[in-house]
Image (cartoon, rainbow, N blue to C red):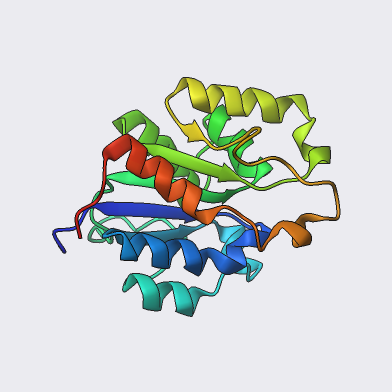
Amino acid sequence: MTGRPVLYVVICAAGPARDAAKLVGAAVDRGWDVCVIATPAAVDGEFIDRQALEAISGRPVRSSWRRSGEEQRNPPADAVVVAPMTMNTVNKWAAGIADTYALGLVAEAVGLGLPVVALPFWSTALDVHPATRRAIDTLRATGVRVLYGEGEWVPHLPGTGGERLASYPWSSVLDAVSARLGPVRP
């Protein structure tokens, strides 16, 4: 135990995931003890730099359930961030599907009443699907702060996501967590 508040950072398989070290580093700088959880697709598709994330957080990146009888691997979370959040994740999460460790954690976080902030990344072609809008509404109704819409994050045109990677608003997710919890004391 570090004595610092614990932030779970859940990373999905989307373009910005390659730069997730920016989020983790900023969270550590703000005084968080960061535990990184990546979806299997983020790990298997090599969307993340696992070694960099582990070096910055000082903890192993997790992507699978612990085995029965295995000791708890991370301290309990004080808050959870999901960034980048994919269309797949938002729809499964809102539907209550917890078929991965990452989805199980975010579903449980809502049930525990933890502050949860999600920052999406998908195209306008995926955004118009009615399930996506319903999922965002469902998560918001459960208290999840989804940074979606004008003034926050807006979808990109298909095939242009790469152009938006440099401007992905990593700091906005930490600002939103701080707004819910108050400043973290390092």
